[in-house]
Structure formats: C-alpha cells, structure tokens
Image (cartoon, rainbow, N blue to C red; front, side, top):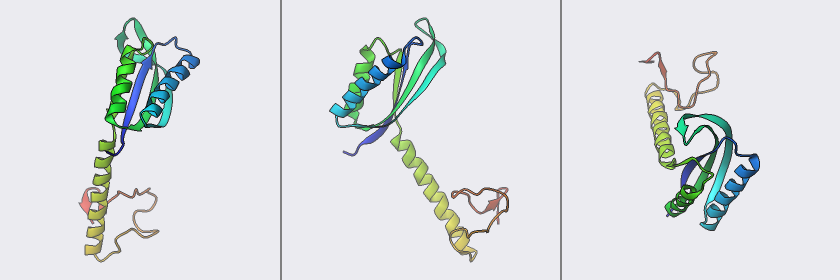
Length: 150
C-alpha cells in the first residue's frame, strides 16, 4: 500500500528545554525510521498559550512533524506518545486526502475555465498581458468579473 501523509502535533510542558525537545524528536525519528517511514518536515512552534488548562499547565511548547508512512507506524507513534510523561497532548491527522480533494477541485476549475475560453474563441490559457491590469491573477482564477461571466 502507498504511503500516506500525516501531521503529528505534540505539546510539551512550558519548562521544556530545547535539548529535551530534540531528544523527544530523536525518539520519534527512531520510530519512523524503524517502521520505514519518512519525516518530511519538523517545525518547532515554540511556547504558546493553551486553549484550556491541562494539568496545571496554561502554556506549552508545540512541535509539528509531517510524516509519510502507513497506519501501523502512526499507531506505534500514538502508543508511544501516550505513555511519555513529557507529552501533555498529541494529535495525529491524515492530510493526504484533503490534498487530493483540493487538487481535484483546482483541476476541475481549470478545465471548466479552459472550456469556456475555447467556447468564446479564445486560447485555453491566458496569454501574457491578457486580463485585468494591475491585479494579480492566480492560475485557478476563472474568466468572471464580479461573479458575471464575460
């Protein structure tokens, strides 16, 4: 089965040092490597205020990992993080499905725009200098002005 993409966010106590964060990240990396996964990126969001108090903690150190792997890998990470005293909370979310939906929507909009342009006798893609002047036009922008088809 193909690898899936997940986002892992975990919160550590506010008094956690950078070295402790690095050690915990090294443990997560070891689990990922052992189960043939890959960490795409890691972001340390730093110390932030919690939405609600968790065990006398009003703040926490947030860390985000984007991981490519399978469900067994994520189950193992989840199991390990549940028993670690350092981790206040953690959450794992599968994000590859959302990306597929966004890509599909963009493709649909682009082909619909190209179909309308061809129907009006224009080339399928916008030409340089064509369109509204002084306005940045995204690729997904269709040929409508204020909701009315041109």
